[in-house]
Amino acid sequence: MTNAKPQSSPVWPWYAMGIAGIVTLVVSFVAPPDAIQGELSRILYVHVPAAWLAYVSFGITMLASALYLWKKDLKWDRMAAASAEIGVLFTGMTLVIGMIWAKSTWGVWWTWDARLTLTAIMFFVYLGYLALRRSTDDLEARAKRAAILGVLAIVQIPLVHFSVVLWRGLHQTPSLLKPASVDMDTPMVVTLFIAVGMFSVMYVAMMSKLVELGKLEEQVILADRSSTAPVAGSAVTAPSLGGDA
Amino acid sequence: MSPPFWKQATTVTRRDLLRERRSGEVLWVTLPFGAVALLLIPIAISTDTVTLRRVGVGMFWVVVMLFGVLIAVRRTTSDSIAQRDMVALTGMDPAAVFAGTALANFLLLLLFETVLGVLTVVLYDIDLSGAEWFPLILILVAVGLSLLGTIAAGIVATGRSTAALVPLIVAPMSVPLLIAATQSFEGLRLGKSILTWILMLAVIALVLAVAGVLSARPLQETG
Image (tube, rainbow over all chains, first blue to last red; front, side):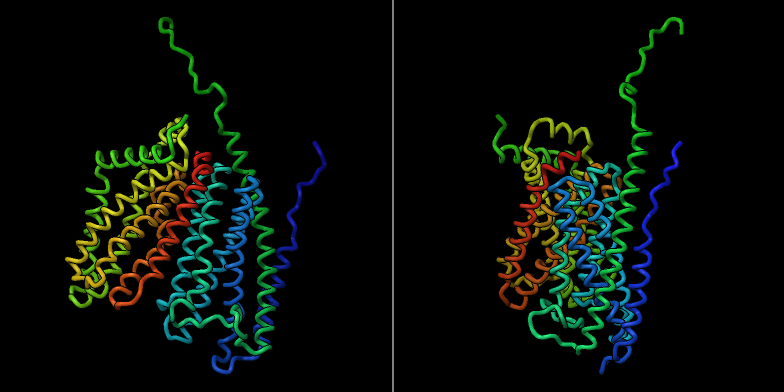
C-alpha cells in the first residue's frame, strides 16, 4: 500500500470560465446602446464572439486532425475532439442567441437566410463528427476516421463566413472581418474585443477540462478492452472424444 | 507484380456492378423510393402546375442528394469485415479500391439522376431552357456525390450504426453540391452564365477525389 494521493484535477479552468463569463456580461452592459437597435445590440457581444470562437474551434479541430494523421499521437486526437465539442456548443449558442435577436429585429425566429442556414448545416456536420467518434471503441480507428472527417469538414467555415457576401440575405455583412474600414464605433469595438478575449479564455479553460476528460475516457476504454479481450487460444476448444462422457 | 491501378479499379467497379445486378438494390429499391418521394411532394405542397414548375428542380436535387446517399451506403452495410480483410490481403492498392467503388457509385448515381430527372420533367413540367447543359451538370453532381459518399462510407465502415451515420455525414456536407446544382439550373432558367457554378462543381469533385485517394490507405489500415 502506498500513500500516494490520486492526481487532483486542476481547478483553474472553473475559475477562469466563471470570471470570463462575468466579465463578458459586465462589459456587455457597460457598453453604450446602439443608436438604432438600442439595448438589443448588447446581445451581439455574446453572439459574435460565440460565432468567432466556433470558427476557431473547428479550425483547431482541423489542425489537430491533420497533426494526428501526420504524427499518429493520440494527444492530437483528444485535442481535435475537445475543440469540436466546444465548437458545437458555441455554434448552438450562436444559433439560439441569433434566433432571439432575429425575433426582436426581423419579427421571426428563423428566416432562410444563407448565413443562418449554412451555420445550422455546419452545426450538423460537426454533430456528425461527434457521432462518428461514438461509433467505435477502437481508439486508433476512431482517431484516424475522425481526423479525416475533421480535415474535410473545414470547407464549411469559409462557406458560412462568406455566405453574406455571396448571397444577398437579411443577415448583415461583416462589420469587422473585412478588408475595408470598420463599421462600428470605438467603444463598441473595444467591448466586442474584450468579449472575444473572454470567450477565448473560456475556450482554453474548456479545452483543458475536455482534453483531460478525453484522456480518462481512453483509460476506461483500454481497461474495458483488457478485461474483455479473449485470451490467446480461447477460441480453441478441446475435441470431444466421445465414449466415456 | 500487381496489375496496373486502373485494372484494379475497374475490377472493383465490375464487382460492385455485378453485385448490384444480382441484388437490384438501386434499380428496384432506391430508384422507386426516389420516384415515390417525387410523387409525394406535390401532395404535401400543392398540385398547382405553376407552383410545381417553380419548386420542381429544387425538389429533384433534394431527392437526389438524400436518396443518392443510400446508393453510396449500400456497400458499407453489406460488406463484412472478413470481405474487407480479404480485399486488403489480395494486395490491391487501397486507392484503386476507392476509385473503383466511387466509379461504380458514380454510374449508379448517374442512372438514378437520369431516370428521376426525366420523371421530374414529366411530373413537374420543368422549363427545359439550356437543356444542353443538363448532362454536364448531372455528371458533375454524380461525380461529387459518389466521391463524397464513398469517402463517408469508408470513414464509418465497421463502426456502430453505420447505415444511419453515413447520411448524417453526407447530407450536410453535400450542401455545396446542392447549391451549385440548383444555382446552375436557376442560371439556365434566367439565361445567365453558369460557368462559375460548373467550375465550383468541378473543383469540389477534384478536391474530393484527392481527399479520397489520400485517405484510402489510412482508412484501410483501420479495418
